[in-house]
Amino acid sequence: MKKFTSILDLTDEIYGRVFLSLKGSLVLLESRMKKHRTIRDLIDGIYRKVFLSVDWFLVPLENRVLNWYVRRYPNRFRARLDACIEKSLQYFEAQPTLIADALFSFTLGINETFEPRLAPIIQKGSEYCRQWKDPHLRMLDRNYDAERDGAYCPNEVNPEELSAPEKPWLTSLYADQLGLTEDYLAELEAIDDNGGYGTTHKLLACFNLKTFSTIPHEAIDLVIESTIAPMVRAQRRSRVDDVYCERVGMLQQLEQSGYHQYVQPAWILRIMRAQMEGGGWYEYRSFFRSQSDQHPSCLALTALIDYRERRLKNRTGDSGPQRRELGQGFPWATEGEGGRTIENTQNGG
Image 1: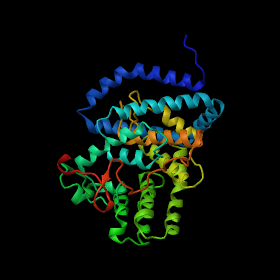
Image 2 (image 1 turned 90 degrees about the vertical axis):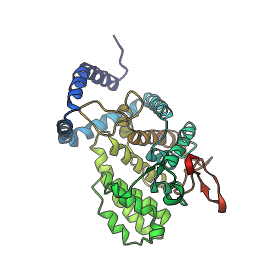
Image 3 (image 1 turned 120 degrees about the vertical axis):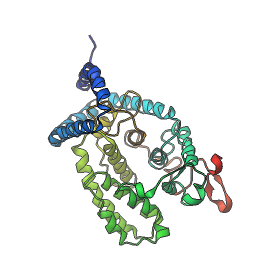
Image 4 (image 1 turned 180 degrees about the vertical axis):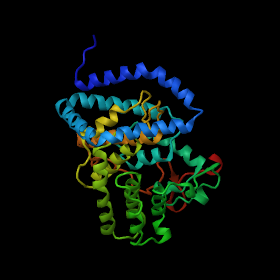
């Protein structure tokens, strides 16, 4: 009989066996549901609502157990964390290219010295820049001009098709060109959704404004501080999905800027336990089988590496290069005229 070293290992084993026993039925049901997308979405909606109805009191209790586990078995936690990071690195090493958000997360989200294996993964982002005319790329190079540098790209990101939280984030990237003033902060308040994507993108926009606008930092800081409590509150009663990982990443960004350490060990352990067999993470919790997606996967990997290096190893990057700044330049770029960092995207070159 298999020996279990902790109650968490036992619960993981039970969950795995139950899942395997149901897997055949789920595969058959899913194949039949492919022709009935509306019904499938309805079942998924009911599935999530059932969990939401009990998560508000179950998740905090589970988090207490998970936090206790990390304190009681730090070596097991560290070994499991290292294994999850290794598996996720292999997942991204197998990807032919990176989506823009993965490129941003790996270059701007953590110190580049924390995980050397990210460097060749980041280089895959150059293919995205050759293929996509994307105004978001100004996050990497403040001199990026979508009309000029993306003129030969076969694909295009249409700003009009962005979601409501994404549009202010993009607008904030061009605050200097648009002449945004302190009045714009009121528009950011309108997208706040009490800890969801609206709140995280409100915070992202504030980071952009500190770099690309002349708005007083004191005024921006007040908006930043208003995002913390809703994100922490939502995190304490939520299970892992895309926005869960995004909130952890945002709170870690605040920690790097000198704010209080809000991220709990339980949140990191939840991310670790939600990792899929192939090394990635799912976007949404689903009753049916889920597939790995680069967006939650890049957020999860960044969060795990950051936690390992800053919280477990107490590294700050003081002994080497710091985290890249917004608009600093493409990681693979060469020096162009006037000293500007550019990536030649013409004709895929």
